[in-house]
Image (cartoon, rainbow, N blue to C red; front, side, top):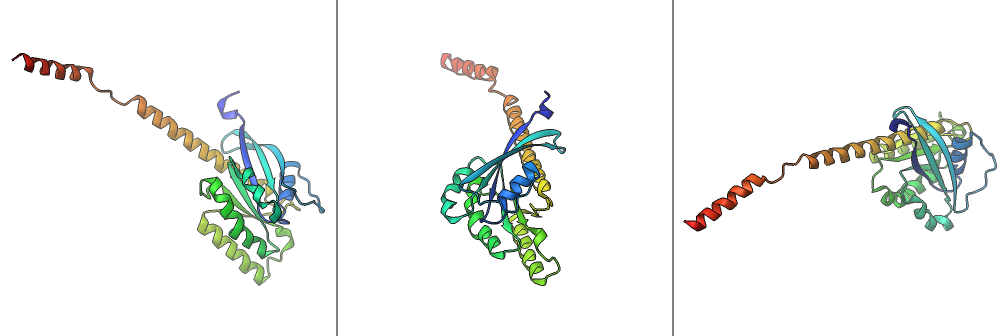
Length: 220
């Protein structure tokens, strides 16, 4: 198998308050199914799916860790954040308070495990199928969400696990960004090795001349 076709493994964590639809997003992405009466996640749940990155002409195995949003399980979440390549912050568009929780609690808890960078964090406003886009209050709320995401350098997607709207797009975008980052790191590491290998060593001739000069000086 050529290097360009070699599958990569990408760990992605789903983070956010309970009832935001994190498990439903994971199930829609991995099985293309939706359960109207999905039980709350206890601790965490694991899903995986192989996807194709057209940008990188490679396949990637996406390992999705769905974390519980209830307060009693919050202390467990950081152990699932470790070594995550990327994260989906999920809130419920029908509940502005769920976005407040993401901004006030979940993003600050996640950032230390993402090298304090939002580069590989995506915001999902889930349940877009359940809101009235013409409602002034909804429009004002989403404007606030988009402004916060823009100020923090976070890509925002309006999603629906129920209809499947933009679910695959979210994961494809995040995986492509992660693979971009890995490619840049590999290129930088290669450049560093190349620079090190071409560094000019101390001239043995010059060292010898210096030694002979000193020797001659002693014999005068």
